[in-house]
Image (cartoon, rainbow, N blue to C red; front, side, top):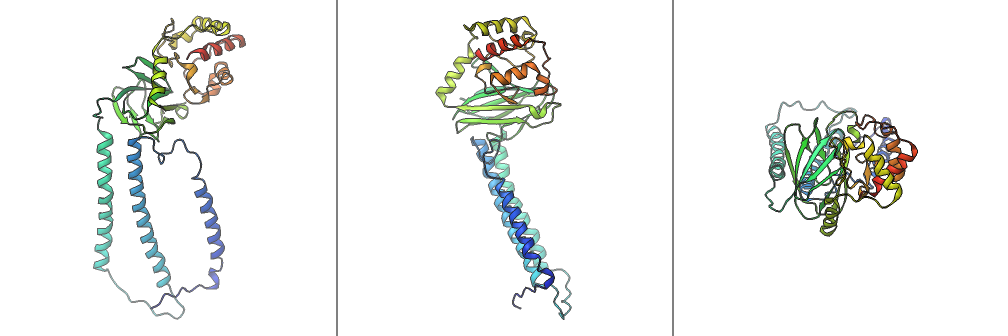
Length: 345
Ligand code: CUA
């Protein structure tokens, strides 16, 4: 029997409904455009590229399933709808071929998805066998990140620099509670578990700044536990490493020197380290290269003198719940501290 859609006056509102649906669809798809620095769909490493390819495969299987299932559904709705004066349809019970078909087809599709999924898991989950891998220790703390480079003698916070094209072997630990390391454009998530060391490796293949964040609820400031991974050209990485491996230099500028005095005379030193000075606190971020960082308070604010002033004036307003005590400082002392911290490069 030929296909004869039977549209009654009762369905006249359908075109308007379809138009509204189409407009909404266009708006939703519009939302997918633009810059998304934390999108796993724009991979910047070999590991993230594997995950992205796997996603693409599964996505196209899903599109195929959707088109076939919805196609048959829509066809059936129109083809077998009730018509005025129509006969009672033939009553059937079961259809062996259909039953076998719709059991077998999904099973085969699941096998086709499972094979590349398991292959990918085996590759990205094992420890790296690259003997030239750069080891970086990542320590999750409430609510910031510590990065240590044992072979380079560098300790830094919230911003890790990596050379492009070299495998990085991350060793992840927690100093307190569960955290999760997630830089979507570079790799999948990996938990930081107290009392256990986890590993994660990837090889960055493009230069740039890759934002990430803690992906495991870890308390008050969890949502403000961001980080940056900065992938440099090898030469830029070398100069960053050289600048950061040494001790800080006593600033020449008078205001910054006064700030150094304020820093050393206050509670700052009991929590923060500045290499080459009496400040050897371990509880808060190492500030040796603070002036060269892009952000402060683990990615909450851009690292500018105005923002640093805000932070020193009232840390709890900038990042509620953070564990840095509000040290009582005069406006002059804050100005001097801002000058000193900015000079630490
Ligand atoms: Cu650390 Cu959430």
